[in-house]
Length: 424
Image 1 (cartoon, rainbow, N blue to C red):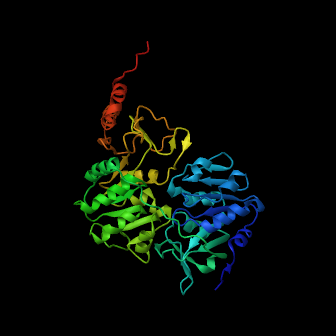
Image 2 (image 1 turned 120 degrees about the vertical axis):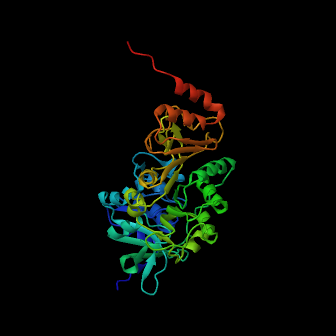
Image 3 (image 1 turned 60 degrees about the horizontal axis):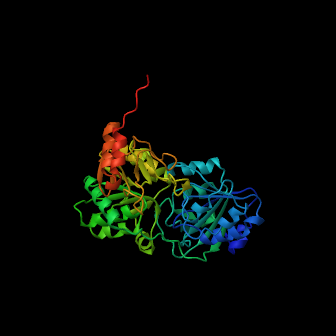
């Protein structure tokens, strides 16, 4: 059995070949120790470039990117990367989650930076909280650098990597990155209450990131909904639902949770450790619209920045600032559409936090359309549910205006009643 060489992080980074495309694991699997070393040494490497999804931690490589030593591309800008976006240095790639493993093939990625558990007695390590594109990145890489963290859980699914596949081992110098729950408030709780009323019996839920998904998951505990399963992502709030009898202890082909990422804290990681009810899969499986559409009563709940009166959804930009990525939303809305009894729901507060701007708008101001107008079945704010499926453009505009903040409804209603002048 081939054993990897154990070395310091700087020494491991120095072995990266010239012209390498480096892929870093995302989320709670972020290899912070290796990324810090990469940031320190990027100017000594020969034409490297880095790519990744949503990173957590401190982004210690952004200084090297800003200096032009390490071009960085991401399909999910987050945290410090949002402010650092700059053509040629830190660039955004609009890409749906299910397509990312294929992009790594097109970009000829050659180096994988990962975080793993210590090997077991048979030499198997676990990628722990992150599978998504990571499993594929390891499979295709010619050089695999892994930092070993003793806090990495051993998870089921596409997360096993044999130590013989790893070329360099580094002892992790930082604890696992965590993703604390978003802070709930009265608005998010009211939105979640409306979404809860839309759920069918025994639903499979896909929940995005944010306060509304946190509130909805918490409200399930006191609801009549039972037999709930989850796809896409797992968070801390899902853990108590097992002991409460809301989520079944199911494994096998239909586990209780089928995820690409675990996004939470130590509570979630401890629960997922060795738990066959939580299975992580490559995003070509966990985000496959075709595969997920075979699940009955799949309800996709995603957030947005703005929704216009046609039902078009913007979820990536605020003004001219890129603040998020397409992520899995495009995949999941298709899955919800194809699922027997399924739904695609867009949930958002009616206004910006200061209350000055409506997030239900006449026409999108915030750049590209993330989801086309035919994709959402319903849009939910703290003022109710706008049902769009099967409605005319006039009916959907009226429904959307009705769930806007009362202070902004008059301008939206005026827009729905305006008729263009006839052209002679």
